Image (cartoon, rainbow, N blue to C red):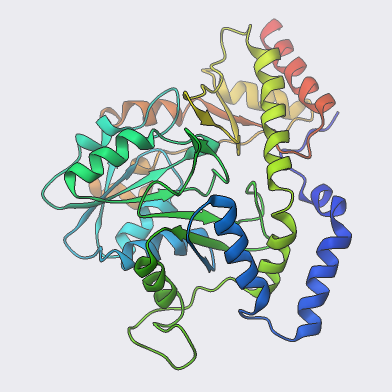
Length: 368
């Protein structure tokens, strides 16, 4: 049996008439930048997240950069961010003119904690970027409290946590702003690059919107210098269709994850994902930890099961950050994760039969 890591063609075919109709309406309108679909998406996504403002932009990386710029982060500032994340989280700090300061993460939940952040705060620290990784929300109650006490801005990277929540609060709504990516493989994905920033602060939303649109809120309005990061109309139209299905797709991911929990729990050599108390984990990825990671990955691929590694290198050990001269001892958890994590197929297009096949193959690996 073949089990792809994800199959976006299946998802498209399931809602093809609606998607094709939405795209055709954009073509018929002749408007490809801005317009009604973008405004509809901003309104509906803000409503879904139970927040006041949503600014649609070109991609999630831009959202992080725009948030830093709008908050006034720049030269001489430090921003704390997890050592275990995708590089967009840290590169935007450098691009804004500030210095990325890495902090290690929790071994069970893969996210940064209050203690990790506290140990990195200096007189130059101005902000913290929290990453809700793999669909798991970080402990925002304690982190928000720390940032309030230390007078630090707080940004949530929710690119892997669409509608994940903690104590009923949706990811992205606890901080100054939450940033989302709609890259095609995300829980809510466009047919290309797209993103947004959500916030309850009206002035911050206006600043982000200006920075994303050449410094203006309308044509030829350039109050400040900005740059170009706008969600195009076709992507907005596609996302408007997909918004109706995101809760069902998340539920299917959770269902698939539960099958893994039930069928792999007895294998002592595997460390399965942990669920933080009062958190709805939406399983953008189902990430296990295993010492024989590379051997297991090779074995599964030989049996038709595609797996991925998120991530092969912790950020401080990427060549881009050699100048920081970090050692493996600086971030022991992240150093361990880069050699032991393996992501199993969990997307809503994967069938129960395929999940059970993956579990059977993993069991046979350890039997052998």
